[in-house]
Length: 100
Image (tube, rainbow, N blue to C red; front, top):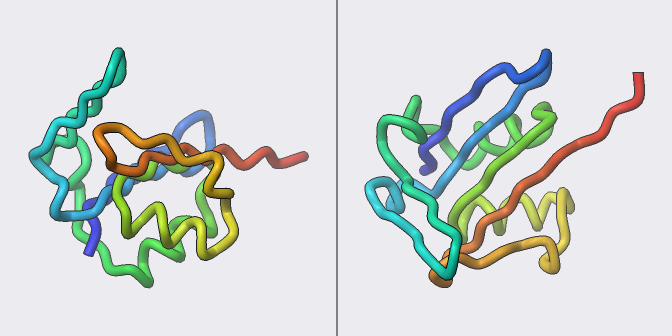
């Protein structure tokens, strides 16, 4: 299960998804900090299947956690070299460039 937030950004779907068990934690390392608040990330709780559908149709994705980042990697949406670790927790940003 994941905590998810969806928004429209400049006419595109932007998603923020994190592993549900990370809600309420704060990741800090060097000059980076991510506060995984329920107010921001937990607009809804979704399944792995729902997350896969959102990953397919979004233009921008911000992903935090072993499970959701692993899912994006297994869907070949990014490569391991693109994953940043903050306090040992995987963080991945995906931007899909689409030509119109």
